[in-house]
Every structure is written in structure tokens, then in C-alpha cells.
Image (tube, rainbow, N blue to C red; front, side, top):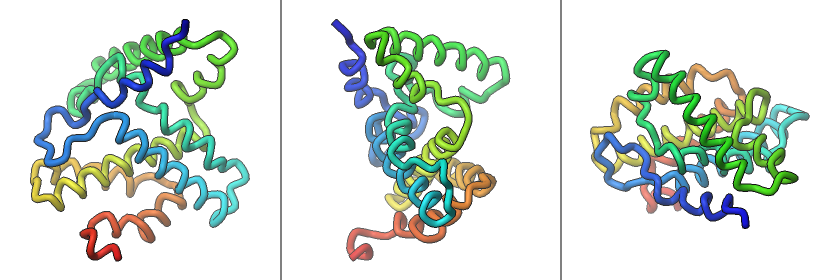
Length: 191
């Protein structure tokens, strides 16, 4: 018997933004879905607008679905804690690697290669797109909280926006120009 997919279903139990007051709490499953939607969009823009031959929207979406899966075992460590010092970051990276190994051990051997690429993506275009989509999803969460009157997310929004602006992905810049402003609108304004 293999337990991998039952563990994936537990992503919905892992709360994000645990050190901050949330008007609308978010779990890892919700974040992963939004990250997958955004990764797919970024890769489509990369492929269709910028001619990126290595842009595979479906691979980017799949990788994004699993990008935070290790948090099922580690929990979502808040960013200020995770990046407190190089030693803490390195220790957490070891914990994440252990979590990835544990999750992969829950799959039959022939399936581990496929999921290993999602759980520990390394470098390359897909990994860069997933990192950008992950940051973008976090920024959108900040915008939503601010729109709900939650000033708790003001600094997180500023810092996350600065990180997004520093990324050198034309598909990200295009998304931020053409699609991101809509996330600050009300439902009635979206019609």
C-alpha cells in the first residue's frame, strides 16, 4: 500500500501566514492551486508571446501543484524565521530534503522519478517559472488582505513586490502589467 496521495490530500490542513492576522486564512492546498494557475499562465505567455521553446505550461502547472508538498511534513515555516540566518536556512533546507525523501518513499519505485522532479525541481525554466508564480501568489494574497483592510500585510506586500520586480522574466512583467491590476478590484469592478 502506498500513501503518497493520501498525504497530498493533507495539504489543506497546513496553514500559511501563521504569524500574521488573516482576514481570509489560506492553506497550502489553496496556495498551490493558485501557484499552478499562475505558473501555467506565465509559461503560456513565455511560449506564445516570447517564443520560449522550453516553455511547457502543463509541466509548470504540475510542478507548481507539488512545490510546497514537503510542508505537509514540515509545516509552513514563516519567512522571517526561515531566513533569519544562513544557518537556520541551511538547517531548514535539510529538513525539506528529508521531507521530500519521505514523500517519495510513499510512491512505487517506478513513479519516484516523475514526482522527484516536482518535489525537488532544481534549476531551469520550469523551476524559475514556479518560483515566480509562488511569489506572485504570495503577492496576490497580500493585495487581497490589504483590500480587506488588513494592514498586517503592508510590509509583506512591499517586500514581495520588490522581489517580483527584481525577477528578470519578461513573462512575469507582462502578467504584472496586463493581469495583476485586476486582483485589486472588487467583484463588481471585474464585470
